[in-house]
Length: 223
Image 1 (cartoon, rainbow, N blue to C red):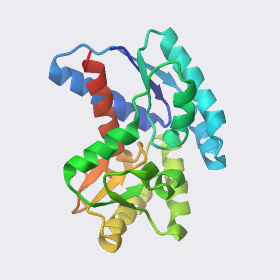
Image 2: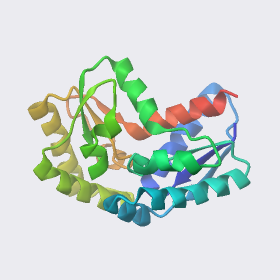
Image 3: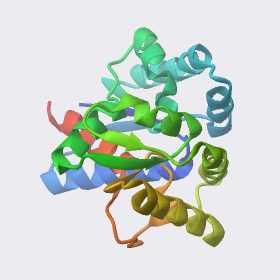
Image 4: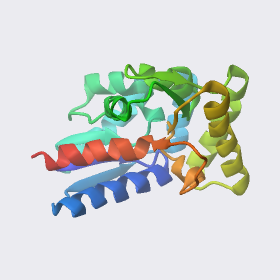
C-alpha cells in the first residue's frame, strides 16, 4: 500500500517515522511506497494552543488531498500533538487515516502495565493521551505542565535538544516515575526522542512515534 505521511510537525519526528518505517520494510523484505508532505510546525502549534481544531483539520485535509493526488491510499499525521484535531480531520479526509492513539493504547495494553506517565504538548498531557482506555495515565503537576509544553514546542520547532533541555525532560520523566508511580513513561511528543536518545533512566520509556510508525508499517505491508 502506498502510504502518505503529513510530516514536518516537527522535522525530527518525521525522520524518526521515516527511518522506522524503512527499517520495518527492510526487515520484512518488502518494498516501501511512501510519500511525505511537509506541514508547518509553528502553524500547527499556534492552532493547538488556541484550540482551533476545525481550522487545523482543514489545513491537514489539504495535505491529505496532496497525498491522494500523489497516489497514496492511506495517510497518517506524524505528531501526537497534531492528533488534537484527528476526529475533525477524519470527518473530511479524502483518505483513511492511520491513527496513533489506538496503536499506542494497544501497545501499552500489551505491556501489562497499569500506570503510565506522559510528556508532550499541553493537550496531550491534560487529556491524558487523549483518554487511553488500557491504562491509567498521569501527567506532570498542573503548575509544571506549562513549562513542559513550552520546552517541548521549542524543541519540536528546531528538531534538536540542548543539554539543558535533555536534563529538563529527564528530570520530568523521573519525577513521573518516582513521585507519581508511573511504571512506564510515554514520550507523547513525537520529537522527544531527540532529548532521550539511548539514555537509561532506570525505568522503561515508550516512544509514541515508534509505536505509531510500527502501526503504519503494518498497514502498509498488509496489502
